[in-house]
Length: 120
Image (cartoon, rainbow, N blue to C red; front, side):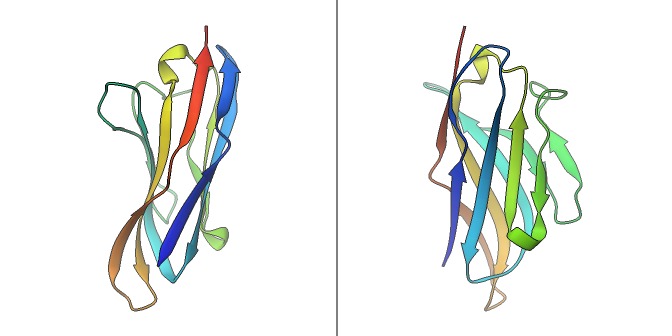
């Protein structure tokens, strides 16, 4: 079993910064994609950013230039520093990972989510 635990959410004023972290633990052989999604009230969950094990990244247009996904493969951890935050960034942010477990099976896991609230 693999667990993803997010941290770093909170309340911040518009223009401020937060740094999200997500650490994976458990029966991990390796992790391929790690992603951040977010879901605002009344809206569908949307992909914010993704990163491969090799460090290739992709960011949603709405966060380009403000958020930068990164990861530490040795720590099975993905980060999302968020700068110049806007009220429309308010959402629950979820971590997601595609990995192989120690039985070499392909699996996917989600974190429990962390709330980010940006006040105007």
